[in-house]
Length: 126
Image (cartoon, rainbow, N blue to C red):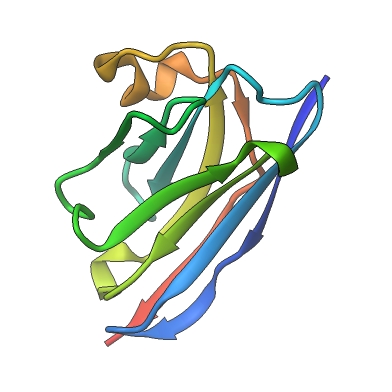
């Protein structure tokens, strides 16, 4: 049984930063890729960022490139999403997820992830 427990999130003003954390319990995520997705009210869940197990490959949605950074500490079974220069349009519930895939296309697909965190609300005020 795999559980992904998220922490972080909250309410910030535009231009500020937040960091989300996601820690895996049960079977570790050693060897697995990890991703972050977000879902705004009335919208579909969308890809934000992903990292392969080694961290050698990281990919980002165009909307967050240069502002968000995904990183992971495999010794702590934890993946992070550092969000800088936040904008009101970043407001959403953010989810971490685990996948066995490592190719570029699969990492961006919500359907390729089997395990999901509980979600963290991020609200950016203007």
